[in-house]
Amino acid sequence: MERTEIFEIARNGLWKQNPALTQLLGLCPTLAISTSVVNGASLGLATVLVMALASALTAALRNLIPYEIRIPVFILIIASLVTMVDLAFNAWFHSLYLVLGIFIPLIVVNCIVLARVEVFAAKNGVLSSAWDGITMGAGLVVVLALLGGLRELLGAGTLFGGIDMVFEGARPLHVLPEAYPGFLVAILPPGAFLLLGFLIAGRNWLEERAARRARGAAHEARPAAA
Amino acid sequence: MNAAFAATARNALILFGFALAFTALMAITWGATRDTIRASAEAEKMKLIDEVLPPRAYDNALLSDWTGIGPEPALGLDAPSRVLRARRGGEPVALLLEAQANDGYGGPIRLLVAVGADGSVLGVRVTQHRETPGLGDYIDLHKDRNKAHPWIRRFEGRGLAQIPPERWRVKKDGGNFDYVAGATISARAVTGAVGRALAFASAHRDALFSAPGGARPAGGG
Image (cartoon, rainbow over all chains, first blue to last red; front, side, top):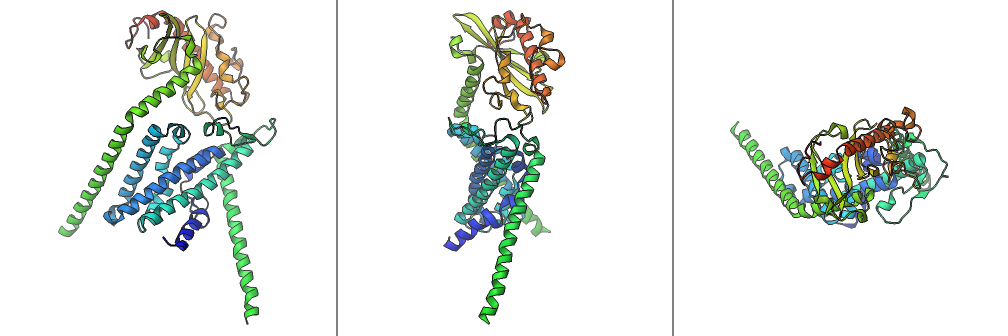
């Protein structure tokens, strides 16, 4: 992998092609699980692991897979990988499994994994594909943690609720006063749609602003050059 | 025609090969992890049991001292289950029952109920539920925001001697038990299920304790 390629792939995963904000893939688990920072980040991290493995394995096998039957083979690879990761975590990383365990089977239905395998890993080398899986997953982690944080803050007035399941003894932050009545809609699925909408709008606004500035800079640059 | 057939057959074979290879990989993983997973599942179960029944209270090998019961409508179960029996020096201490409230807001609520030999509830825990997060999920000890007096612990020490069966309801329905306003359904379901489990355990107490291990109790169930 060249340096520029490494940066390009990372930029794609985290910002330009962010799976949750731009590709809008894998919304089902995204919206269902992002009720708190801890839940959102945990699902995201489990997805990173599966995406890295699935993309690397597909890239390694890509020359053996006939084009016509690629989709069933990809699904086979992803589903078997998730099953094996699930079993391995349960057996050998049990304390981590207690946190991520319920999320791992959800990844089978997350189409972002299949999408990256089909779009990227089927045409690229093992290292690039693994890196693509990791950065796409990282893009998901950021958005899920952000969405979870917003929902938790509005819904319950706390942040990092359930952190004691990950780090023993850690305490959630009570950002808003104890008497905060909670805003239930934020925690229910409609709240997830609404807040995701705001996040997408925010991302688009930043992109547009950057584009406007680039245009403005180009305008100013021309007379000077003339 | 023949070329197309050959190509299809080739693809089918390749797909078959992939399916075979990955099934084998999964089978190997399953075989390698089976024993560890079983051990940690038992440890999990023990941890949950410890929450409803302190380990000091009994001295028998709890997980292996069980008696099977058939699908028991009084416990809300439509499949056979096991009743664990805690003893101390051979004397009955407590029965541990699985129960299910089928009238939860988000579907069935699974419960673990410990009933003392004296006929009082020793502890209740919700083991599985899908009640609304932030609203009805206070029935789960770990989700209850009232850490000082969690709702699920209100049953502890209560028995049919003090509270007759028809009063094992939430206050709104004329019973004895509190609930959180706005989320009555979850509390109503759990309270009813605990009351029915307690009534079942009390009625079949002796049969359940004396049934041979791993068998259906005579007359009970």
